[in-house]
Image 1 (cartoon, one colour):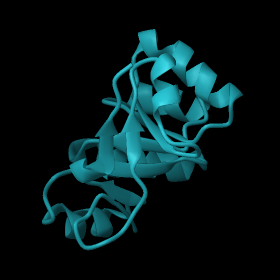
Image 2: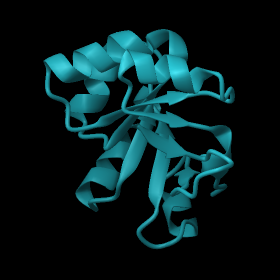
Image 3: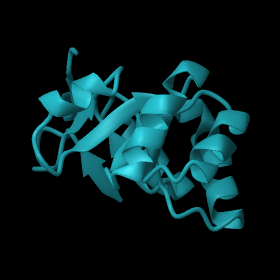
Image 4: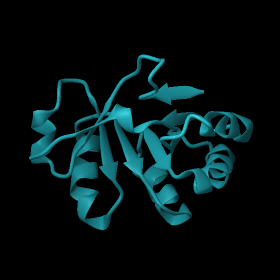
Length: 130
């Protein structure tokens, strides 16, 4: 299981961006975090064209499928969607890793039993303004 932002384990951070311009305010070779919305498709296209590692936060199965088709490296879901998302990712052989967004350490065991690829704690997300 991958851990991002856990207080015991060192890990990479994700820089939460909301515009193409905010990419320049992130460190070189950093991983970015984008919320899946239609108005962010230009950002996602920019990230893909520039081979930038990024995570897409999704809220339903349709968005999950879009995220995979858009070549996201990580797909972030809530705990309620975790089992379904992981099953779909395995069925369709997604290249992306499924990460469950949580602030509760008690979710680690449940996510491990569900076979989820990883967990994302809030400490791993750094907000970047344009």
